[in-house]
Amino acid sequence: MNSMTGYGRGALERDGRQLTIEIRSVNHRFLDLSLRLPRCLGFAEQAIRERIGKKLSRGHAAVFATCSTEGYAGLGG
Image (cartoon, rainbow, N blue to C red):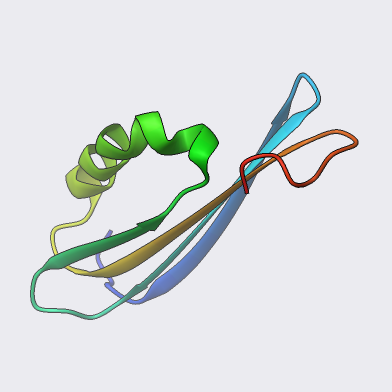
């Protein structure tokens, strides 16, 4: 990523479950990640940090994730 300011959103639906990820970033001298993950993704926090760190070298990035299951939108998020 060349610019440190941006916004992105993606969603994946599989087997009646939906995962939505939003990333917002602004200019910052160093890399500063802020993750807001539901409990269902808590196990993956370190892997998510490492993967984002490989793509971003600096900037403040806020990552928001939500999980939902068909018929019950409150699961983990």
